[in-house]
Length: 591
View 1 (tube, rainbow, N blue to C red):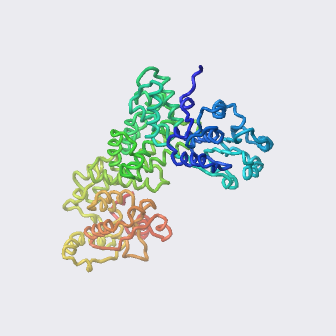
View 2 (view 1 turned 30 degrees about the vertical axis):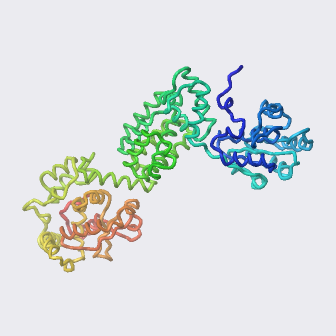
Protein backbone atom coordinates (compact mmCIF):
# COMPACT_ATOMS: atom_id res chain seq x y z
CA UNK A 1 0.00 0.00 0.00
CA UNK A 2 1.29 3.45 -0.90
CA UNK A 3 2.33 5.73 1.93
CA UNK A 4 -0.20 8.35 2.95
CA UNK A 5 0.72 11.62 4.64
CA UNK A 6 0.07 11.83 8.37
CA UNK A 7 -2.48 14.62 8.08
CA UNK A 8 -4.54 12.45 5.69
CA UNK A 9 -4.09 9.25 7.66
CA UNK A 10 -5.21 10.88 10.91
CA UNK A 11 -7.89 13.18 9.52
CA UNK A 12 -10.92 13.09 11.89
CA UNK A 13 -13.84 10.99 10.71
CA UNK A 14 -16.37 11.97 13.37
CA UNK A 15 -17.06 15.20 15.20
CA UNK A 16 -15.60 13.86 18.43
CA UNK A 17 -12.16 13.64 16.79
CA UNK A 18 -12.06 17.30 15.74
CA UNK A 19 -9.67 19.23 17.99
CA UNK A 20 -9.85 22.84 19.06
CA UNK A 21 -13.29 23.70 17.59
CA UNK A 22 -15.59 22.64 20.42
CA UNK A 23 -18.28 25.31 19.91
CA UNK A 24 -18.67 24.62 16.19
CA UNK A 25 -18.63 20.86 16.67
CA UNK A 26 -21.30 21.00 19.36
CA UNK A 27 -23.55 23.18 17.21
CA UNK A 28 -23.29 20.93 14.15
CA UNK A 29 -23.89 17.78 16.20
CA UNK A 30 -27.00 19.28 17.75
CA UNK A 31 -28.33 20.19 14.32
CA UNK A 32 -27.85 16.60 13.16
CA UNK A 33 -29.59 15.20 16.26
CA UNK A 34 -32.56 17.59 16.08
CA UNK A 35 -32.87 17.61 12.29
CA UNK A 36 -32.48 21.40 12.13
CA UNK A 37 -30.10 21.24 9.18
CA UNK A 38 -29.60 24.51 7.33
CA UNK A 39 -29.49 24.68 3.55
CA UNK A 40 -26.19 26.65 3.40
CA UNK A 41 -23.15 26.86 5.64
CA UNK A 42 -20.07 29.07 5.46
CA UNK A 43 -16.92 27.77 7.17
CA UNK A 44 -14.28 30.50 7.61
CA UNK A 45 -10.82 30.33 9.12
CA UNK A 46 -7.11 30.04 8.49
CA UNK A 47 -5.52 27.00 6.86
CA UNK A 48 -5.44 23.66 8.64
CA UNK A 49 -8.06 24.45 11.27
CA UNK A 50 -10.64 21.85 10.20
CA UNK A 51 -12.98 23.53 7.69
CA UNK A 52 -12.92 20.87 4.98
CA UNK A 53 -12.77 18.09 7.56
CA UNK A 54 -15.93 19.30 9.29
CA UNK A 55 -17.61 19.72 5.89
CA UNK A 56 -16.92 16.08 5.02
CA UNK A 57 -18.09 14.85 8.44
CA UNK A 58 -21.24 16.94 8.02
CA UNK A 59 -21.84 15.41 4.58
CA UNK A 60 -21.51 11.92 6.07
CA UNK A 61 -23.75 12.75 9.03
CA UNK A 62 -26.68 14.05 6.96
CA UNK A 63 -26.56 10.90 4.77
CA UNK A 64 -25.67 8.35 7.48
CA UNK A 65 -28.13 5.49 7.90
CA UNK A 66 -27.23 4.95 11.58
CA UNK A 67 -26.07 8.23 13.14
CA UNK A 68 -25.01 8.07 16.77
CA UNK A 69 -25.27 11.19 18.97
CA UNK A 70 -24.88 13.44 15.93
CA UNK A 71 -21.84 11.56 14.60
CA UNK A 72 -21.79 9.42 11.45
CA UNK A 73 -21.39 5.72 12.10
CA UNK A 74 -18.61 5.36 9.48
CA UNK A 75 -19.78 1.76 8.90
CA UNK A 76 -22.86 2.01 6.70
CA UNK A 77 -22.73 1.91 2.93
CA UNK A 78 -23.33 5.67 2.62
CA UNK A 79 -20.49 6.56 5.01
CA UNK A 80 -18.04 4.21 3.30
CA UNK A 81 -18.84 5.52 -0.17
CA UNK A 82 -18.38 9.11 0.99
CA UNK A 83 -15.05 8.24 2.62
CA UNK A 84 -13.90 6.56 -0.58
CA UNK A 85 -15.04 9.51 -2.69
CA UNK A 86 -17.43 7.45 -4.80
CA UNK A 87 -20.75 8.79 -3.50
CA UNK A 88 -22.91 10.61 -6.03
CA UNK A 89 -24.61 12.51 -3.20
CA UNK A 90 -21.48 14.45 -2.16
CA UNK A 91 -19.93 16.75 -4.76
CA UNK A 92 -16.62 18.41 -3.84
CA UNK A 93 -15.60 21.39 -5.91
CA UNK A 94 -12.46 23.53 -5.86
CA UNK A 95 -13.48 27.09 -6.66
CA UNK A 96 -9.85 28.06 -7.26
CA UNK A 97 -9.87 26.06 -10.52
CA UNK A 98 -13.59 25.90 -11.29
CA UNK A 99 -14.75 29.43 -10.74
CA UNK A 100 -16.62 30.31 -13.92
CA UNK A 101 -20.27 30.77 -14.77
CA UNK A 102 -20.42 27.52 -16.76
CA UNK A 103 -19.33 25.49 -13.73
CA UNK A 104 -22.23 26.78 -11.68
CA UNK A 105 -24.69 26.44 -14.49
CA UNK A 106 -23.84 22.73 -14.40
CA UNK A 107 -24.60 22.67 -10.65
CA UNK A 108 -27.92 24.45 -11.24
CA UNK A 109 -28.87 21.87 -13.88
CA UNK A 110 -27.82 18.87 -11.76
CA UNK A 111 -29.53 20.02 -8.57
CA UNK A 112 -32.92 19.69 -10.21
CA UNK A 113 -32.62 15.87 -9.98
CA UNK A 114 -33.19 14.51 -6.43
CA UNK A 115 -31.02 11.72 -5.02
CA UNK A 116 -32.41 8.24 -4.55
CA UNK A 117 -31.86 8.58 -0.80
CA UNK A 118 -30.37 11.08 1.63
CA UNK A 119 -29.31 14.60 0.64
CA UNK A 120 -27.13 16.13 -2.02
CA UNK A 121 -24.23 17.95 -0.35
CA UNK A 122 -22.08 20.42 -2.31
CA UNK A 123 -18.74 21.24 -0.70
CA UNK A 124 -17.21 24.27 -2.42
CA UNK A 125 -13.68 24.99 -1.19
CA UNK A 126 -11.95 28.40 -1.51
CA UNK A 127 -15.28 29.92 -2.48
CA UNK A 128 -13.86 33.45 -2.40
CA UNK A 129 -12.10 32.64 -5.69
CA UNK A 130 -15.39 32.63 -7.64
CA UNK A 131 -15.84 35.34 -10.24
CA UNK A 132 -18.58 37.96 -9.71
CA UNK A 133 -20.51 36.46 -12.62
CA UNK A 134 -20.41 32.99 -11.04
CA UNK A 135 -21.60 34.40 -7.72
CA UNK A 136 -24.51 36.15 -9.39
CA UNK A 137 -25.51 33.00 -11.23
CA UNK A 138 -25.33 31.04 -7.96
CA UNK A 139 -27.26 33.43 -5.69
CA UNK A 140 -30.82 32.31 -6.46
CA UNK A 141 -30.00 28.63 -6.04
CA UNK A 142 -28.08 29.33 -2.83
CA UNK A 143 -31.04 31.24 -1.38
CA UNK A 144 -33.77 28.71 -2.21
CA UNK A 145 -32.28 25.29 -2.97
CA UNK A 146 -34.43 22.13 -3.00
CA UNK A 147 -35.10 20.47 0.36
CA UNK A 148 -32.65 17.69 -0.42
CA UNK A 149 -29.69 20.03 -1.16
CA UNK A 150 -27.11 21.37 1.30
CA UNK A 151 -24.30 23.77 0.38
CA UNK A 152 -21.15 23.98 2.49
CA UNK A 153 -18.84 26.84 1.47
CA UNK A 154 -15.30 27.01 2.84
CA UNK A 155 -12.94 29.97 2.61
CA UNK A 156 -9.83 31.45 4.18
CA UNK A 157 -10.81 34.98 3.14
CA UNK A 158 -14.48 35.74 3.91
CA UNK A 159 -13.92 39.47 3.40
CA UNK A 160 -13.93 38.87 -0.35
CA UNK A 161 -17.41 37.37 -0.33
CA UNK A 162 -20.41 39.44 -1.35
CA UNK A 163 -22.79 40.49 1.45
CA UNK A 164 -25.58 38.79 -0.50
CA UNK A 165 -23.72 35.47 -0.13
CA UNK A 166 -22.95 35.98 3.55
CA UNK A 167 -26.59 36.73 4.36
CA UNK A 168 -27.73 33.43 2.83
CA UNK A 169 -25.43 31.20 4.91
CA UNK A 170 -24.93 30.14 8.51
CA UNK A 171 -21.42 31.38 9.22
CA UNK A 172 -18.94 29.51 11.45
CA UNK A 173 -15.52 30.97 12.17
CA UNK A 174 -12.87 28.35 12.87
CA UNK A 175 -10.33 29.62 15.35
CA UNK A 176 -6.63 28.81 15.37
CA UNK A 177 -5.88 25.74 17.44
CA UNK A 178 -3.88 26.32 20.62
CA UNK A 179 -0.38 24.91 20.97
CA UNK A 180 -1.48 22.74 23.91
CA UNK A 181 -4.15 21.01 21.80
CA UNK A 182 -1.72 20.51 18.92
CA UNK A 183 0.90 19.04 21.26
CA UNK A 184 -1.65 16.61 22.69
CA UNK A 185 -2.67 15.48 19.20
CA UNK A 186 0.96 15.09 18.11
CA UNK A 187 1.65 12.82 21.06
CA UNK A 188 -1.31 10.63 20.05
CA UNK A 189 -0.09 10.42 16.45
CA UNK A 190 3.52 9.73 17.46
CA UNK A 191 2.37 6.97 19.81
CA UNK A 192 0.32 5.38 17.02
CA UNK A 193 3.22 5.64 14.55
CA UNK A 194 5.88 4.48 17.01
CA UNK A 195 7.83 7.75 16.77
CA UNK A 196 9.81 8.90 19.80
CA UNK A 197 10.15 12.63 20.45
CA UNK A 198 11.20 14.90 23.26
CA UNK A 199 8.62 17.24 24.78
CA UNK A 200 10.73 20.19 23.60
CA UNK A 201 10.62 18.86 20.03
CA UNK A 202 6.84 18.48 20.12
CA UNK A 203 6.57 21.97 21.58
CA UNK A 204 8.72 23.39 18.76
CA UNK A 205 6.53 21.74 16.12
CA UNK A 206 3.33 23.03 17.75
CA UNK A 207 4.67 26.58 17.98
CA UNK A 208 5.84 26.47 14.38
CA UNK A 209 2.41 25.31 13.15
CA UNK A 210 0.89 28.70 14.11
CA UNK A 211 -2.48 27.23 15.03
CA UNK A 212 -2.86 24.83 12.09
CA UNK A 213 -3.21 21.12 12.86
CA UNK A 214 -2.43 20.15 9.27
CA UNK A 215 0.77 22.21 9.34
CA UNK A 216 1.82 20.52 12.57
CA UNK A 217 1.31 17.02 11.16
CA UNK A 218 3.12 17.96 7.95
CA UNK A 219 6.12 19.24 9.91
CA UNK A 220 6.10 16.10 12.04
CA UNK A 221 6.02 14.00 8.87
CA UNK A 222 9.08 15.80 7.48
CA UNK A 223 11.04 15.45 10.71
CA UNK A 224 10.23 11.76 11.07
CA UNK A 225 11.38 11.16 7.49
CA UNK A 226 14.60 13.13 7.98
CA UNK A 227 15.55 11.24 11.15
CA UNK A 228 13.99 7.78 10.71
CA UNK A 229 14.17 5.59 13.77
CA UNK A 230 15.71 8.35 15.92
CA UNK A 231 14.25 10.16 18.88
CA UNK A 232 13.34 13.64 17.69
CA UNK A 233 14.98 16.51 19.56
CA UNK A 234 14.39 20.25 19.49
CA UNK A 235 17.71 20.79 17.69
CA UNK A 236 16.69 18.35 14.95
CA UNK A 237 13.37 20.15 14.51
CA UNK A 238 15.17 23.48 14.10
CA UNK A 239 17.54 21.90 11.58
CA UNK A 240 14.70 20.55 9.46
CA UNK A 241 12.77 23.81 9.60
CA UNK A 242 15.84 25.85 8.68
CA UNK A 243 15.51 28.17 11.66
CA UNK A 244 17.70 29.02 14.65
CA UNK A 245 17.60 28.50 18.38
CA UNK A 246 16.13 31.13 20.69
CA UNK A 247 19.62 32.05 21.86
CA UNK A 248 20.38 33.38 18.37
CA UNK A 249 17.42 35.77 18.44
CA UNK A 250 18.38 36.89 21.95
CA UNK A 251 21.88 37.63 20.71
CA UNK A 252 20.57 39.63 17.74
CA UNK A 253 18.29 41.57 20.08
CA UNK A 254 21.25 42.44 22.32
CA UNK A 255 23.17 43.66 19.27
CA UNK A 256 20.21 45.91 18.36
CA UNK A 257 19.91 47.32 21.89
CA UNK A 258 23.67 47.93 22.16
CA UNK A 259 23.82 49.53 18.71
CA UNK A 260 26.33 46.89 17.62
CA UNK A 261 25.70 46.86 13.87
CA UNK A 262 28.91 44.94 13.21
CA UNK A 263 27.90 42.07 15.50
CA UNK A 264 24.37 42.04 14.05
CA UNK A 265 25.58 41.76 10.44
CA UNK A 266 28.16 39.13 11.38
CA UNK A 267 25.53 36.94 13.01
CA UNK A 268 23.16 37.42 10.07
CA UNK A 269 25.93 36.39 7.69
CA UNK A 270 26.64 33.26 9.75
CA UNK A 271 23.01 32.15 9.44
CA UNK A 272 23.06 32.73 5.68
CA UNK A 273 26.21 30.65 5.40
CA UNK A 274 24.41 27.86 7.27
CA UNK A 275 21.86 27.77 4.45
CA UNK A 276 19.01 29.61 6.14
CA UNK A 277 16.68 31.70 4.00
CA UNK A 278 16.61 35.48 4.42
CA UNK A 279 12.83 35.62 4.71
CA UNK A 280 12.82 32.79 7.23
CA UNK A 281 15.40 34.57 9.39
CA UNK A 282 13.42 37.82 9.39
CA UNK A 283 10.13 35.99 10.06
CA UNK A 284 11.53 34.04 13.00
CA UNK A 285 13.19 37.11 14.50
CA UNK A 286 9.91 39.02 14.18
CA UNK A 287 8.03 36.23 15.95
CA UNK A 288 10.54 36.23 18.77
CA UNK A 289 10.03 39.98 19.23
CA UNK A 290 6.29 39.43 19.07
CA UNK A 291 6.48 36.87 21.87
CA UNK A 292 8.61 39.29 23.86
CA UNK A 293 6.10 42.12 23.37
CA UNK A 294 3.10 39.96 24.31
CA UNK A 295 4.98 38.64 27.33
CA UNK A 296 5.81 42.16 28.54
CA UNK A 297 2.38 43.63 27.79
CA UNK A 298 0.46 40.78 29.46
CA UNK A 299 2.79 40.38 32.41
CA UNK A 300 3.70 36.82 31.45
CA UNK A 301 0.14 35.58 30.92
CA UNK A 302 -2.16 35.19 27.91
CA UNK A 303 -0.58 33.22 25.07
CA UNK A 304 2.75 33.13 26.88
CA UNK A 305 1.31 30.50 29.24
CA UNK A 306 2.22 28.04 26.49
CA UNK A 307 5.94 28.76 26.87
CA UNK A 308 8.38 26.34 28.37
CA UNK A 309 9.88 27.38 31.69
CA UNK A 310 13.31 28.16 30.23
CA UNK A 311 11.69 30.25 27.48
CA UNK A 312 9.73 32.18 30.10
CA UNK A 313 12.90 32.99 32.04
CA UNK A 314 14.67 34.18 28.88
CA UNK A 315 11.77 36.39 27.87
CA UNK A 316 11.57 37.81 31.38
CA UNK A 317 15.25 38.79 31.26
CA UNK A 318 14.87 40.46 27.85
CA UNK A 319 11.57 42.15 28.76
CA UNK A 320 13.06 43.80 31.83
CA UNK A 321 15.78 45.39 29.69
CA UNK A 322 13.45 46.92 27.08
CA UNK A 323 10.31 49.03 26.92
CA UNK A 324 7.31 48.30 24.72
CA UNK A 325 7.92 51.23 22.36
CA UNK A 326 11.38 49.97 21.55
CA UNK A 327 10.14 46.44 20.82
CA UNK A 328 7.33 47.78 18.63
CA UNK A 329 9.86 49.86 16.68
CA UNK A 330 11.90 46.71 15.99
CA UNK A 331 8.78 44.82 14.86
CA UNK A 332 7.74 47.70 12.62
CA UNK A 333 11.12 47.80 10.87
CA UNK A 334 11.15 44.03 10.33
CA UNK A 335 7.53 43.99 9.13
CA UNK A 336 8.30 46.64 6.52
CA UNK A 337 11.29 44.58 5.47
CA UNK A 338 9.19 41.40 5.13
CA UNK A 339 6.86 43.20 2.72
CA UNK A 340 9.79 44.53 0.69
CA UNK A 341 11.43 41.10 0.43
CA UNK A 342 8.54 39.62 -1.54
CA UNK A 343 9.59 41.19 -4.84
CA UNK A 344 13.15 42.25 -4.03
CA UNK A 345 15.93 41.48 -6.50
CA UNK A 346 18.58 41.38 -3.76
CA UNK A 347 17.00 40.32 -0.49
CA UNK A 348 20.25 40.16 1.43
CA UNK A 349 21.04 43.85 0.88
CA UNK A 350 17.59 44.98 2.02
CA UNK A 351 17.80 42.76 5.09
CA UNK A 352 21.21 44.11 6.07
CA UNK A 353 20.01 47.70 5.75
CA UNK A 354 17.01 46.97 7.98
CA UNK A 355 19.16 45.23 10.60
CA UNK A 356 21.50 48.24 10.68
CA UNK A 357 18.43 50.45 11.20
CA UNK A 358 17.59 48.33 14.26
CA UNK A 359 21.01 49.14 15.69
CA UNK A 360 20.86 52.81 14.73
CA UNK A 361 17.26 54.03 15.08
CA UNK A 362 18.37 57.65 14.68
CA UNK A 363 19.05 56.90 11.00
CA UNK A 364 15.29 56.59 10.38
CA UNK A 365 14.45 60.28 10.65
CA UNK A 366 10.81 59.76 9.67
CA UNK A 367 10.07 57.96 12.95
CA UNK A 368 9.47 60.10 16.08
CA UNK A 369 10.85 57.37 18.32
CA UNK A 370 14.19 57.44 16.55
CA UNK A 371 15.03 60.88 17.95
CA UNK A 372 13.96 59.76 21.41
CA UNK A 373 16.35 56.84 21.13
CA UNK A 374 19.13 59.16 20.08
CA UNK A 375 18.53 61.51 23.02
CA UNK A 376 18.47 58.60 25.46
CA UNK A 377 21.72 57.22 24.08
CA UNK A 378 23.53 60.58 24.24
CA UNK A 379 22.27 61.23 27.77
CA UNK A 380 23.39 57.80 28.92
CA UNK A 381 26.86 58.34 27.47
CA UNK A 382 27.29 61.76 28.99
CA UNK A 383 25.95 60.85 32.43
CA UNK A 384 28.03 57.69 32.70
CA UNK A 385 31.20 59.44 31.53
CA UNK A 386 31.68 57.12 28.56
CA UNK A 387 34.38 58.32 26.16
CA UNK A 388 32.76 59.75 23.05
CA UNK A 389 33.87 58.60 19.65
CA UNK A 390 34.70 62.17 18.60
CA UNK A 391 34.15 64.71 21.31
CA UNK A 392 35.48 67.55 19.16
CA UNK A 393 32.79 66.92 16.58
CA UNK A 394 30.16 66.38 19.26
CA UNK A 395 30.86 69.45 21.35
CA UNK A 396 32.32 71.72 18.68
CA UNK A 397 35.07 73.03 21.01
CA UNK A 398 38.57 73.28 19.65
CA UNK A 399 41.67 73.85 21.72
CA UNK A 400 41.94 77.38 20.37
CA UNK A 401 38.33 78.13 21.24
CA UNK A 402 38.85 76.67 24.70
CA UNK A 403 41.85 78.93 25.29
CA UNK A 404 40.02 81.97 23.98
CA UNK A 405 37.08 81.21 26.26
CA UNK A 406 39.24 80.81 29.38
CA UNK A 407 39.18 77.00 29.54
CA UNK A 408 42.50 75.65 30.67
CA UNK A 409 44.28 72.54 31.89
CA UNK A 410 42.85 69.10 31.33
CA UNK A 411 39.66 70.44 29.79
CA UNK A 412 41.51 72.28 27.03
CA UNK A 413 43.68 69.26 26.23
CA UNK A 414 40.69 66.95 26.18
CA UNK A 415 38.71 69.27 23.97
CA UNK A 416 41.61 69.69 21.57
CA UNK A 417 42.31 65.95 21.44
CA UNK A 418 38.63 65.07 21.05
CA UNK A 419 38.75 62.57 23.91
CA UNK A 420 36.08 63.26 26.54
CA UNK A 421 33.17 65.65 27.02
CA UNK A 422 33.79 68.76 29.12
CA UNK A 423 32.52 68.86 32.69
CA UNK A 424 31.41 71.81 34.77
CA UNK A 425 34.64 71.65 36.78
CA UNK A 426 36.75 72.01 33.65
CA UNK A 427 35.22 75.35 32.74
CA UNK A 428 36.65 77.60 35.47
CA UNK A 429 38.52 80.51 33.83
CA UNK A 430 42.20 80.73 34.65
CA UNK A 431 43.44 83.65 36.79
CA UNK A 432 44.42 86.73 34.85
CA UNK A 433 42.65 85.70 31.70
CA UNK A 434 40.08 88.19 30.58
CA UNK A 435 37.73 87.57 27.72
CA UNK A 436 37.81 91.28 26.93
CA UNK A 437 41.59 91.58 26.61
CA UNK A 438 42.74 93.56 23.61
CA UNK A 439 39.57 95.63 23.24
CA UNK A 440 40.01 99.31 22.56
CA UNK A 441 39.09 101.49 25.57
CA UNK A 442 35.77 103.23 25.25
CA UNK A 443 34.54 100.95 22.45
CA UNK A 444 31.23 99.09 22.78
CA UNK A 445 33.22 95.88 22.95
CA UNK A 446 35.17 97.21 25.95
CA UNK A 447 31.92 98.15 27.66
CA UNK A 448 30.56 94.67 27.10
CA UNK A 449 33.75 93.05 28.36
CA UNK A 450 33.91 95.19 31.49
CA UNK A 451 30.23 94.52 32.10
CA UNK A 452 30.86 90.77 31.78
CA UNK A 453 33.84 90.91 34.13
CA UNK A 454 31.84 92.79 36.69
CA UNK A 455 28.78 90.59 36.49
CA UNK A 456 30.76 87.30 36.59
CA UNK A 457 31.17 87.67 40.35
CA UNK A 458 27.99 89.55 41.25
CA UNK A 459 25.24 87.07 40.28
CA UNK A 460 26.35 84.46 42.79
CA UNK A 461 25.76 86.87 45.69
CA UNK A 462 22.47 88.02 44.21
CA UNK A 463 21.27 84.46 43.73
CA UNK A 464 22.30 83.38 47.21
CA UNK A 465 20.35 86.29 48.68
CA UNK A 466 17.29 85.14 46.79
CA UNK A 467 16.79 88.55 45.24
CA UNK A 468 16.38 87.52 41.63
CA UNK A 469 14.01 90.39 41.00
CA UNK A 470 16.95 92.79 40.93
CA UNK A 471 18.80 90.82 38.22
CA UNK A 472 18.44 92.60 34.84
CA UNK A 473 16.67 90.82 32.02
CA UNK A 474 17.62 92.85 28.97
CA UNK A 475 20.62 91.62 26.97
CA UNK A 476 22.68 94.13 24.97
CA UNK A 477 23.94 92.85 21.60
CA UNK A 478 27.57 92.69 22.80
CA UNK A 479 26.69 90.58 25.84
CA UNK A 480 24.45 88.43 23.72
CA UNK A 481 27.36 87.80 21.40
CA UNK A 482 29.37 86.52 24.36
CA UNK A 483 26.51 84.31 25.53
CA UNK A 484 26.21 82.78 22.07
CA UNK A 485 29.93 82.32 21.58
CA UNK A 486 30.17 80.36 24.84
CA UNK A 487 26.85 78.59 24.43
CA UNK A 488 28.20 75.06 24.28
CA UNK A 489 30.38 75.52 27.35
CA UNK A 490 27.45 76.97 29.28
CA UNK A 491 25.14 74.10 28.35
CA UNK A 492 27.78 71.51 29.21
CA UNK A 493 27.93 73.00 32.70
CA UNK A 494 24.26 72.28 33.48
CA UNK A 495 23.61 69.98 36.48
CA UNK A 496 21.94 67.43 34.19
CA UNK A 497 24.91 66.61 32.00
CA UNK A 498 22.79 64.46 29.72
CA UNK A 499 20.29 67.17 28.80
CA UNK A 500 22.99 69.81 28.83
CA UNK A 501 25.09 67.80 26.40
CA UNK A 502 22.11 67.46 24.08
CA UNK A 503 21.57 71.23 24.08
CA UNK A 504 25.29 71.85 23.59
CA UNK A 505 25.38 69.73 20.46
CA UNK A 506 21.90 70.13 19.01
CA UNK A 507 20.71 73.68 19.70
CA UNK A 508 21.62 77.26 18.88
CA UNK A 509 20.71 80.49 20.62
CA UNK A 510 18.96 83.26 18.69
CA UNK A 511 17.34 86.60 19.41
CA UNK A 512 14.70 88.97 18.15
CA UNK A 513 15.32 92.74 18.15
CA UNK A 514 11.73 93.20 19.25
CA UNK A 515 12.26 91.14 22.44
CA UNK A 516 15.63 92.07 23.98
CA UNK A 517 14.68 90.38 27.26
CA UNK A 518 14.26 86.93 25.64
CA UNK A 519 16.78 84.34 24.52
CA UNK A 520 15.40 81.87 21.95
CA UNK A 521 16.81 78.34 21.92
CA UNK A 522 16.19 76.92 18.45
CA UNK A 523 15.84 73.14 18.08
CA UNK A 524 14.99 70.78 15.27
CA UNK A 525 11.36 69.70 15.33
CA UNK A 526 12.02 66.21 16.75
CA UNK A 527 14.32 67.58 19.48
CA UNK A 528 11.77 70.28 20.26
CA UNK A 529 9.08 67.69 21.05
CA UNK A 530 11.37 66.03 23.56
CA UNK A 531 12.84 69.05 25.36
CA UNK A 532 10.48 72.02 25.05
CA UNK A 533 8.23 71.03 27.96
CA UNK A 534 11.03 70.20 30.38
CA UNK A 535 10.53 72.89 33.05
CA UNK A 536 13.47 71.69 35.12
CA UNK A 537 15.74 72.04 32.11
CA UNK A 538 14.39 75.53 31.41
CA UNK A 539 15.13 76.62 34.98
CA UNK A 540 18.63 75.12 34.81
CA UNK A 541 19.41 77.12 31.66
CA UNK A 542 18.21 80.34 33.29
CA UNK A 543 20.31 79.66 36.41
CA UNK A 544 23.43 78.95 34.33
CA UNK A 545 23.09 82.19 32.35
CA UNK A 546 22.40 84.20 35.48
CA UNK A 547 25.41 82.73 37.28
CA UNK A 548 27.76 83.32 34.38
CA UNK A 549 26.63 86.64 32.90
CA UNK A 550 24.63 88.44 35.59
CA UNK A 551 21.44 88.69 33.55
CA UNK A 552 18.33 86.55 33.68
CA UNK A 553 16.48 86.85 30.38
CA UNK A 554 13.35 84.92 29.56
CA UNK A 555 14.19 81.56 27.96
CA UNK A 556 11.98 80.23 25.21
CA UNK A 557 12.37 76.99 23.25
CA UNK A 558 11.31 77.19 19.59
CA UNK A 559 11.49 74.67 16.79
CA UNK A 560 13.15 75.34 13.48
CA UNK A 561 10.00 76.27 11.62
CA UNK A 562 8.91 78.69 14.37
CA UNK A 563 12.31 80.34 14.37
CA UNK A 564 12.20 80.86 10.62
CA UNK A 565 8.72 82.40 10.63
CA UNK A 566 9.46 84.60 13.66
CA UNK A 567 12.44 86.24 11.96
CA UNK A 568 14.94 85.26 14.65
CA UNK A 569 18.55 86.15 13.94
CA UNK A 570 21.50 83.94 14.67
CA UNK A 571 24.42 85.48 16.50
CA UNK A 572 26.75 85.07 13.54
CA UNK A 573 24.52 87.25 11.38
CA UNK A 574 24.22 89.86 14.12
CA UNK A 575 27.98 90.01 14.71
CA UNK A 576 28.64 90.32 11.01
CA UNK A 577 26.27 93.28 10.85
CA UNK A 578 27.92 94.98 13.84
CA UNK A 579 31.40 94.38 12.44
CA UNK A 580 30.38 96.21 9.30
CA UNK A 581 29.63 99.16 11.54
CA UNK A 582 33.20 99.05 12.88
CA UNK A 583 32.53 97.15 16.10
CA UNK A 584 35.02 94.31 16.66
CA UNK A 585 34.52 91.26 18.91
CA UNK A 586 37.57 89.38 20.15
CA UNK A 587 35.67 86.31 21.36
CA UNK A 588 35.83 83.40 18.96
CA UNK A 589 32.41 82.26 17.81
CA UNK A 590 31.73 78.53 17.79
CA UNK A 591 30.67 77.06 14.47
